[in-house]
Amino acid sequence: MKQRQRIPLLYKILYFITKFNIDFLYYRKTYYLNTKNIPSSDTPLIIVSNHQNSLNDAMAILYSMKIRRPHFMARADVFKNPFAAKFLSFAGVLPVYRQRDGMENVKQNLSVFSNIEAFISRGNTVVLYPEAMHQDRHFLGRFYLSYTRLAFGAAEDSNFEKEVFILPSANHYSDYFHMQEDMLQIYGKPISLKPYYELYKVQPREAQMKVNDMVRTQVESLMLNIEDEENYDAIYFLLKTYGKKFAYDKHGNPNILPLKLKTDQALVAILKKAYVQREDFVKNLYADAFHYKKELEELKVEDGMINRTIRISKLLSSSIVLILTFPIFIYGLLHHIIPYHAPKLINRKIKDKLLHPSVFIGLNALLLIPILYILYFVLCLVFTHSLLIAFIYLLTLPLSARLAWNYRKYFLRFLQKVRLYHYKRTMNPRFDRALFLRFGLYQSMDILVDEI
Image (tube, rainbow, N blue to C red; front, side):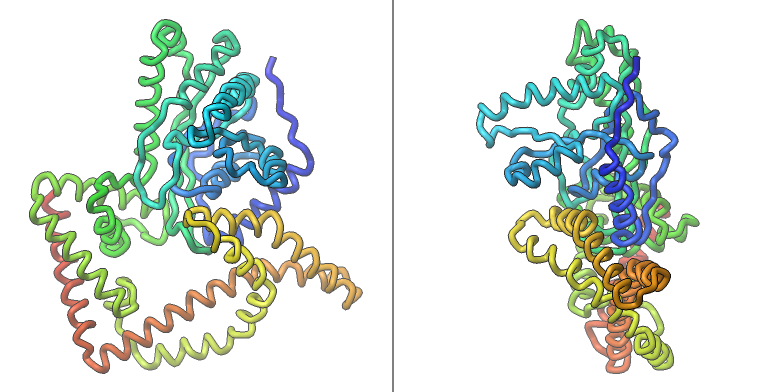
């Protein structure tokens, strides 16, 4: 008989509060794709994903599903703080020890894994990252088979009477480190382990490897996987620049993350094939890409701006917009200056840059934003004695946060326009060189795309 997992009221409250903070305040746009492929909440299930980020990856999966209470695993050292340990345990995060934690601690993993297998077999969900590490690059690392051992162990826990599933998935980000960027969580097709039960009983390793091959193939097809580590930076730069033109040429919109992901996958495949067929040509192309990238950095402009016509009338109109909307920026900034800067104080002590967004999200979504919004609401109610005014004021807060951040982006883009106008007026030689490099780079890429 399937046992439905009880979800505490506090968990539900925190779920919806943090989901709003992340979907509306932190990200510009979130895409949850193929969620129809997620089995029902009473299915013994392991969700497997690539690990491009830290806490963000886990939250992407959590908020893409109808509310349930999956279990996650994290390295044991994050449980050293007693408060963190209690909260992580409440959130369904379990500690896993590594060899550097000492062999005595590593032995505790046996009981942790045994509990997880029983948890899965009771019809619950566990989220695992087979790469066992995160990185700030778009590639798929080696898959460790511990997740397949847990999956078959869960089946064995029920005497192979229950059908255990593994659901491949992937995440993708337009930017790892900044707010108001786009995030995508996409699911593949669930894989039943039932056809492999008999093989597992006699050849467990063979069964695990067969399942792992299928899972990895699906995950790889769902994500952006740049396998060429040596030329990664050049390839990624081309995706961010020429990749936009390539997307439009393929009748896609580079501003819509799922469509950009598809065209980026296609362009990476072309570059991979071209490197085999025309290695010298592609190496020179990558060198040109680096040269062009350096020129853009010196000029402090983006590729998408450099070819634009900048008129003084446009600069004046943009100036007027900035002046008129400045009070909105100040309103949003003053209400959110603590949530924006407080995580930075903590992140100064954290060397792993990929943990910085996790600290920002965790601290704000769970603590600072809810507390400050409640405080602002109460203060407004005290001073105005009007519940309606206080409620309207509360509604303006998250909207002002988004507007303030977008004002900042608009202002930075305005500065680029001013620079470009100055470069063109003064006939800056570096600017002319950058234009020449861009023309040659794009022309070479067009030739390559047409040939392959």
